[in-house]
Length: 140
Image 1 (tube, rainbow, N blue to C red):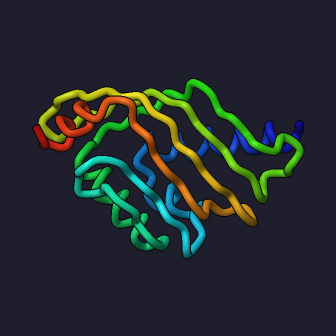
Image 2 (cartoon, rainbow, N blue to C red; image 1 turned 90 degrees about the horizontal axis):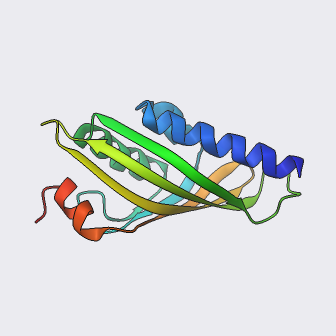
């Protein structure tokens, strides 16, 4: 159970760094060969392979949306007894993003995260409202 508490605390902290646009801290938790899969048809959609590609995608995201606010609804841990170094995590969330023009967009989704040796090796985002995703990125 302590492993689940630690994993949840680390996950909340990671989402907080994104909310605060702390790029270096957000990327620090990724392994060098990590991947991030993002849905849709946006400049960051597809699979970012490697830590540098994840950082580049996050940079584009942060530039597009100066305000990002995740509200975590639930965190699910596959192995509640693992001490956080290796685990699978699913995070259900709501998000509000504000673009450079001040337009606000909201969505909900789930992020799955595979952690090995204390680093994210694979992350996948699933968004519930594809139309809103497209509007947020200027794709109508």
